[in-house]
Image (cartoon, helix red, strand yellow):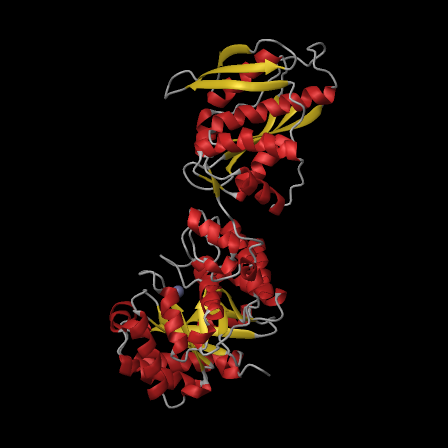
Length: 538
Ligand SMILES: [Zn+2]
């Protein structure tokens, strides 16, 4: 073996326990299983699957994950209470490798206010709980909660006692995000100096990000000898969150010189996908500028940076985006991007277009979008290509749209459409239940095509204030279902484009552009109200 065991840092992921506790992040069982599988393929050593005593759902999740994953250790959390430990043991029964993780507050503030127990009592409870867990599984982790605000001498005493009682991992949590990196590193070092039996257990750390130092504190602890990092994907977790796995792992990987070649078993090429998965199932968006996995993490826009990057990647990039699973760097395009940059991006995104098509897109929708939007991302480019190239023949083309709306008023839409082969565009106006409804009505009136709306969805293609909105809809035309899609920085315009593309598709399918024989324009439609459109737009 090239790598010595002592350099191995275990990765303990608590996305499904601490991460799931973050407000708005709750996941259902299917989602938890999906995340657990992703963590397994990522190479996570220990998956903390839940806190079984807290609810039947948590119990079921821990049990299901225990049955599902094979390679990682599955951990269940328990307070230093007999029924908690027994319940955790029961949930973990089918795991190939199980760990019971018991915790107890050890700081004066926790002893006094939460537990109302003396140091002696806290010590006794810790020992008894580790022993009880040990009877169920040999792999037992103990956490002195709020360790960073615990008297160091008492902490040393607790750590020694729980290792004697059989704890195989002792986790030192910075529960409230209080520690400073140098100070936290010193605390871990002090444990190594003063706990006589410390070599019998793995020392772990669990850091919170209240001051934005969770990753820095974790790394400082690793340098001081900690060999298990507790973390979550995207750093989700209680309050400001936990240390982000992707940042810890990539810091060690990028700077082995600074970490004495310590290593983890994480397959970093899966980090980006895991980040997207967790974001999708929790609904917690990843900030664009988030380290390692944010959309902008590998984007270069400033002229000098972009130029240097194109000549030699490493001039402005310390990590290869491929190493974290991002297919390529995202060179953000903007108003000043040239045609050759646009062409290269299209090629890199896998679009095979003719020079004429590229020109049409560049001088048309791309320039138009660049005027409205400062930065153009891959998703924007994909949206442009999809709407322009995949589009059906445009029997009717949108020339202009104006919508007047207000609270309690009557939403009115004025739309100008141009029919293929006609000299003059047609303009008309209509009112509706909401602005979207008004747009649809006036289009129906101009084109004579009545659609019955079946589904209407709106989402942001990219994030931010000037993001593009994408509207997708399905409608019934006669006996057929036609779909429509529209993209714009204005959600009402996106709605108009989507509806018009459905109209064009309907006409195209019917194989005629004349109005004869079309289904009645007055066909009833599902109402797309203004409130709905606004609420779901971003
Ligand atoms: Zn925590």
